[in-house]
Amino acid sequence: MKSLGIKIGLVPAHRAVFSPELARKMRQAALRAFSQAGIQAVAPDERLCRHGLVESLEEGKKAAELFRREKVAGVVIGAMNFGNEVPAAEAADIGVPVFVFGCKEEGRLTPAANRRDAFCGTLSIGTALRHRGICYAFPQAPICFPHERGFLRDLERFARACKVIAGLRGSSYGQIGPRPLEFETCVFNEVSLLKQFQVKVLPFPLAEIFAEALAIKDTARIKKVMAELCAMADTSLVPKKSVERLARLELALDMHVRKYHLQGLAVQCWTLIQEQFEVSPCTVMARFSQRGIPAACEVDIHGAMSMHLLGLASGNPAGLADWNNRHYKRRNVFSAWHCGVFPPGMAKAKPQMKTQKIIGQVTGEDRAMGTLEFEVKPGPVTLARLTETPEGEFKLLIAEGKVVKAEGKTFGAHGWVEVSDLDCLYRALLSDFPHHTGIVMGHFGQVLLEACKFLGITPVVPLELSA
Image 1: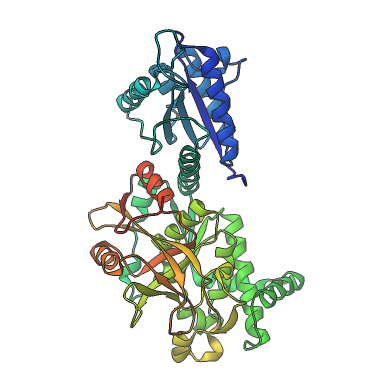
Image 2 (image 1 turned 90 degrees about the horizontal axis):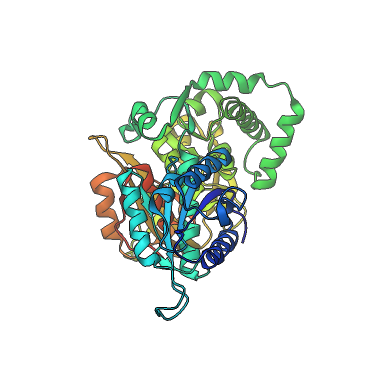
């Protein structure tokens, strides 16, 4: 399997009255499972702990130090047998997500047979973790063999959740201009984000971006980006001067991304930018999102975070959509739409660069060039939306569906998304969530559900998620 690009620590928990040979066998099986799931395993070996197993308190401390040194994003405790709960908890107590499982017996229980008793010992390990206030998860079948398909699925899910958590915590987002005056829906609380997720929001005025874009003298870099824009989309309807403006805007924003180590952007995409810089920034934002740097419309910081969560969970570029329109005939189908800012990797066919039709009516079409128009390719999608309630609680709506072929067309970028019960989903939206949602190809709802546990986010899951 392709590597997930993440390190996870393994604590092979052992108790001396049980067979070390059986425990070592399961340790090796667990390491093979890590490899199959695309995880880089970090585990104590025989030089650090006797038999490469964690039994004593001293060995637990050594394992914890190893995990800190290697900067693991999560820890898996495997009860190789009954295990020793205090050393296992000590090894895992490093402030990262924890996953616990126990190993099955090899055969029929007899008085003379070697046995594990992990069915009992795993409960003791869970108790020790709870005593220390350590949040932990476990597989659907908590007592299993590491080679089992269900365990591999749940281990990969945990690893992806760890990637989400590590990627979100401590992130910095660029706020490019103030939110639109009319869109109270895009308000956010900087202090809440800092306190709960260590997320920083760095504000930059649009005038600063415009000045830097116009000041770029490196014509070779500008031409390179222009060529990339023309290769990515059909630009035949857009004048060359607008393509150049888009290239300059991208380079100016990229300077900020690199200088301030930004993980995402939220852009005031109308109407000042059309009035003063004479383009719509949608294509540029779409290209950042395609690179894994989510760029949200209308200065929607929570929207950028929603996109970021989806990108981390899936490894795919995420878009930001309006819950735009219910299909006139198909009860459970709606249009996930935005003006033209979805990442081009979501397109069914080569995108076309056009005018932002709504804004063009206000500023003139010649000042509103730069959207990407296309239909989203068919397939499964995950929808997610983070919000903070007026009471200060963070909630994440999680839903899954699929992009389908349906009658009806619109401008901008969009896909017809079918879910199992649109009325049920919409009731959840109307209760707690605004008009934007993150969207990504593939089903990753369970990963986000797991991540919520460790991030202190209340998940809202109105529809059943795939396994």
